[in-house]
Length: 97
Image (tube, rainbow, N blue to C red; front, side, top):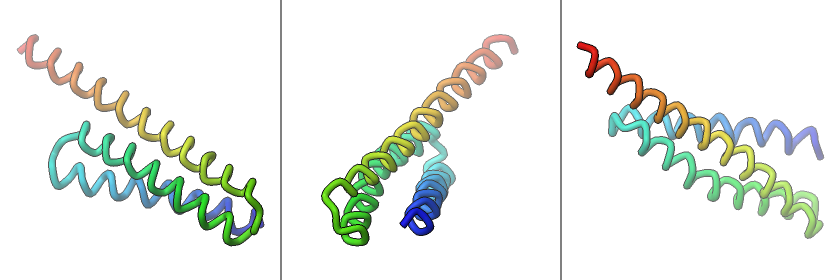
């Protein structure tokens, strides 16, 4: 099972980041992209949990979805921190010039 579920986790993480990047390019707002990744963490966590339950056929497989959502939430927090750093650097550069 890990031969299927672990690569699926990687695919979900990459897809969420690509969708966040597309929203960033569209709106030119890093905070909106981070919020989109945060919302997609819940969605893809639920999808991953449901998929694991259908594949493994055990109620404890739902924890796979929770683990996937946890990784995606950490990813979202990292993007929020990057957005804060970018904002601070932009404001600092605008004040010094």
